[in-house]
Amino acid sequence: MSSCFFVVFLLLPTVRCEPNDPNATPETVALYTRLKEMAVNPDTIMFGQSSSTWFGATGGHAPYDITTNTSNRGWAFTVDQALENYPDELSDVKGVTGQYPAIFDLGMWQLTPNRSIVLSYLLKKAHSRGIITTLCQHLDNPVTGGSPWVDKDPGNVTHTVRRLLPGGDTNWKYRDNLDKIAELVLNLRDDEGKLIPVLFRPLHELNGDWFWWGYGNRANNTLEDLKSFYKYIVTYLRDVKNVHNILYVISPDKFQNKDDYLQFYPGDEYVDIMGTDFYYKSSNDTTSDFHRSLTDLVEMAESKNKIPTLSECGMANNGISTDLNFWNDKILDIVKASMTTRRIAYILTWANHCTDNACELWTPYKGHPAEQDFRNNFFNDPVTIFAGGMN
Image 1 (cartoon, rainbow, N blue to C red):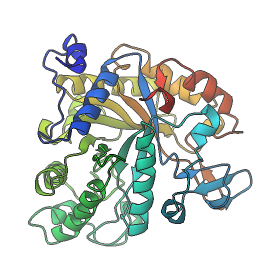
Image 2 (cartoon, rainbow, N blue to C red):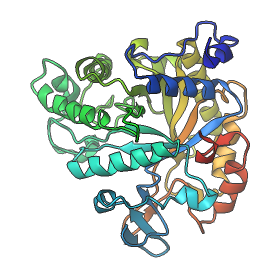
Image 3 (cartoon, rainbow, N blue to C red):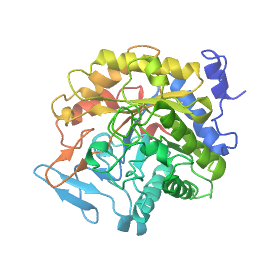
Image 4 (cartoon, rainbow, N blue to C red):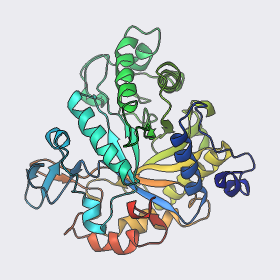
C-alpha cells in the first residue's frame, strides 16, 4: 500500500493514487501522489507564482530584456538567453526569500516558436530544481483572430466555443492549437530522457464573462458548450495525441456555492485537480467569502477524490504596496483558519511584470515596502513550502 493511499485512507475511504489517465507515465503518477499527499497534510502548502523566472519587476540587467520606469528595473527572459543556455538567475520571489517558488505557472499564449523555446527552457530548468510546473493559455480567439478578452474583440464572437468543437466550422483552428500543445509537452524531457509531468488548466476562469471561453457574455457559450469543450481538450490530448504526462486542472473564478461551481464541472474522468481563482479586487471581496470558497472547494474535491488547490489568487491594482501584510492577513491566515481549508496542495499567484510606465505586482520584490512582511510572516511560516523544501 502506497504512503499516499495510507495517509488519505483515514480521511477519505475511497481515495486512490492515480490520475484520470490510465496510461499516465510513472513520473506523472508520482507527481499526482505527491500532490495528493501535500493536499491532505494540513501543515504543508506549496507557494507558486506565474513566470517567476520569466518576468520580474526589479534587478533587470543585460542580457535580459529590461524595462526601466520610475522605481524599478523590470526584466524579461529572452529567447536568445534560452538559445545560449543562459542561467535564469532572476526571480523577484527569490530576491526577497532566497528561494524560488515551489510551483511555476507558465503561459502558452499563441505558442509561437520563440515562446515555445523560452517556455521549454525555463520549465526544464525549474524541473531540475524540483519545482512543479503548470501551464495555462490566453489564446487569441481562433474564430475572429481577436483578443482572448471579449471586450477587446470587435469581431463576431457569437458561439465561439460551439464553432471550435468537433463538427464546428472552425474546429480545425483549435485542433491546430492542441497539436502545438501536444508537440510542446511531448518534448519536455529531463536529462535522463524521461517525460516531465506538468499540470494543465485549460479554460481557466471559464465561469467569468471576460474570455471568449467564458460564460454570460456576447459569445453566448452555454454550459454544455463549455463542458464539452473541456472534455474535448482532454480527450484529444490524452486519447488522440497520446500525451500521458499531463494532470488536468479545472479552475473557475469566484463561485457562489457548490452548485454554482459544479455546473461548469465536466466530469470526474476529465479532472485531476479542482481549483479556484480568487482575487481581491474590491471591498466586496472579503476574507469570509474567501474562506467559504475554500471550504466548499475542499469538500467538493475530497468527495470526488480530487486534489483541491488555490489555482490563482492575489490583490489587484498593486494592493500589496499599501496592504503590506496582505499575503499573511488575507491569504495564509484564512487558509490556516480551519483543518478543512488547510487541505489544499498549493497557492499560486500571477506574474510580476512591467511596462515603460508601470509594474503590475503580485508579490513584493527586493526593496519593496512589503518585502519584510512577506518574508517574515508568509515565507517563514512553517506551513508554506518554497523550492527549498522540495525534493
